[in-house]
Length: 246
Image (cartoon, rainbow, N blue to C red; front, side, top):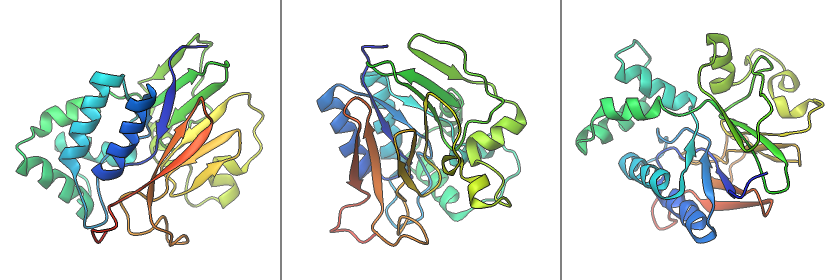
């Protein structure tokens, strides 16, 4: 058990407006944010990469925020290391915003590489949460811990699962880990899937923030999700100011 109270925040995708609202909730309620990754890369007109970067850095200093590594951030890391990757439009936009603001990309890459792939913690009632961007593979053995635990050095095979989830050639029930019925006494948490799940043993917190809709099958306006762990409540923050076209 711990005296630290947590809030888990879903994929941001360069949306400073809802992120500021979510972090203000954390400041107001003395909560430590856990950000599920995909901080950057917007698919809509609104993209505030540098503002998101500054907000997250400030939340780390002020609130001890934890940020997880993720697939979009992984591509940024590879680009900064000058590895060969496919340059998608949203990634190019992210890099251009950093460059135009005079932010050193090398420092951004070094910062991203300090994040854990898995963060595990217990709430005040002793409930255990295990958090990753996409999925924690079975090969990751979480030891007994008192308050928190981090996983920093996955194998290449584990990396794929942690950042992207299971193979997309599988059926939905095989691919989407929350559809199975695993026997576990801990709560699994992820973002990544453009899906919202909150069934008491699984949390998936991605309502399409940074896109035009939540997902191709869900045309509702996108939102940034925050889960208040102690209150066990899920809060939606609109992904952009409605006065501005997304």
